[in-house]
Length: 156
Image 1 (cartoon, rainbow, N blue to C red):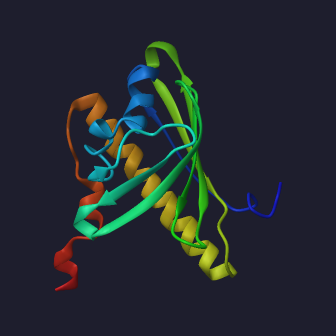
Image 2 (cartoon, rainbow, N blue to C red; image 1 turned 120 degrees about the horizontal axis):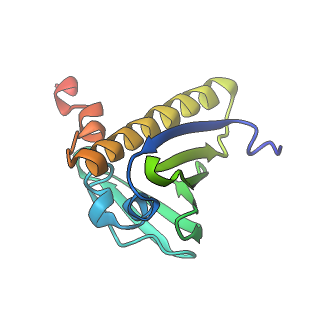
């Protein structure tokens, strides 16, 4: 275990859909925008950089896709400036039961307080993403979990 992977955030969920559908939900922004970010510069492609935007928060982030193994794994780096972390999705086919998705985020830096905050925020965020994906793919419901996490009315 390296210092960069010593601390990690992890979220996992069973999605009761075929692995191809679940995998494409993270590759294809036409699907991903239904449960996570609102805009993307394109599909995830190995070796390419993509911009993801959350318009409700006026926030964009660069995503560099390092690895895509069809229906098995996606590895990307994301962040701004010196706060780059690695996110790895692992997809496990459980047959008729569906697909088990594991998301692990590593590479957190800073003092203990900052690392704990990053771990908490990442775990919470990816848990909401997986719950939103589950609702969308299994029931065709857009829960708006990400957009409702920080409603603008709290800042008024």
